[in-house]
Image 1: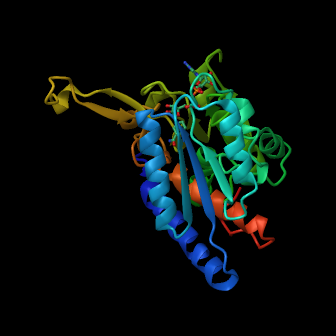
Image 2 (image 1 turned 60 degrees about the vertical axis):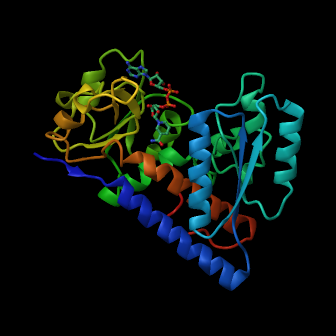
Length: 305
Ligand code: NAD
């Protein structure tokens, strides 16, 4: 069997186009432009890249983007004061504080100071509780993107056996809640799971969110299963040669060994070009959802859990 490739890049472009259409409609019919505020504290290079591309894509779908770049030594009081201002700004429908924060700032305190209705990352404790109890919430972007791809591929997920490898608060746990919400039988595996190969072999759906390069070999995958690879790992790629400074070139791989898994899976997401592009698309979808809810308008179809 050769797995069908689930093209996250193409699907994300479709989601962004859907968001852009709805944004244009909101502007035309209601005179409302959704706004996303992104707060970056410090100068972490990876975070700067993420914030830049979030801002660019926000503008591309017709939304307003508000970037707040704060010094690395910004006090907690000043950061909380900014969040309070954004919470009370009617032009801002979504607030995202780029993580990780510098060590002197309490991440939980900061995230929980965001108005849950504007918490487009879905990390606020209220949203975690609402998702866990099957109520309307803001859903974390990466698991939402995985769910959308699974629904697009399968239609209904009802009754399927799903295994989520990884139990982090940002991916593993909310992913498991979403799959449960779609009536899968869900197993959460983690670093202490006794027989991971055996657990994975039973799954119709495997979501790998560990952060270990190619740790899931193809032989663990049940014939025909759908594999969603969340992992993003950079490894040395000596076959690509060396950089100008003499260092070995690198490449990105997922948590799943793609070559062997794609001979057994029915469908699989590649890395790069799978889950990654869906994450920002879902951030935009969440901002649109937050804006619609704030204005008592119907929620955008197909863009929420
Ligand atoms: P994390 O480090 O917070 O959690 C990793 C989880 O893996 C833990 O729950 C741990 O129990 C589990 N684990 C560790 N070793 C294991 C093992 N040997 N067997 C089974 N489980 C094991 O990581 P995270 O934030 O959830 O991210 C996971 C991966 O997903 C990373 O590679 C990260 O870069 C990637 N990621 C991608 C996106 C995206 O947009 N595509 C978004 C978020 C995270």
